Image (cartoon, rainbow, N blue to C red; front, side, top):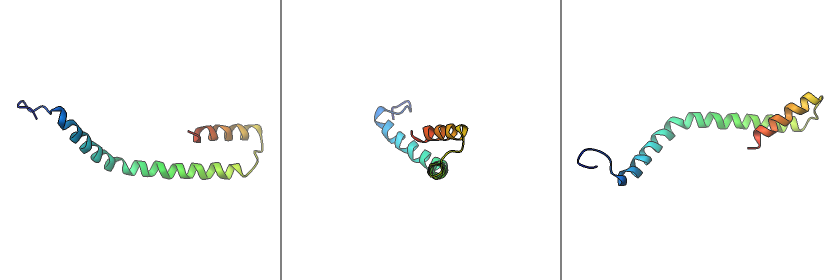
Length: 71
């Protein structure tokens, strides 16, 4: 730190690491939940892929689901 208490450029890497450690701990439950949600969505898409659509609306809904999971 400088004499007036402001951080120097060399300290920024250390502060970034501290923030990253703190945030990763706070976000871990959220990330775990979104990962489980993604697994469920993938299972649903695979299950729907094994059954032919019964209507044009069904086919359109499946297309939208597939578009959303391909990113």
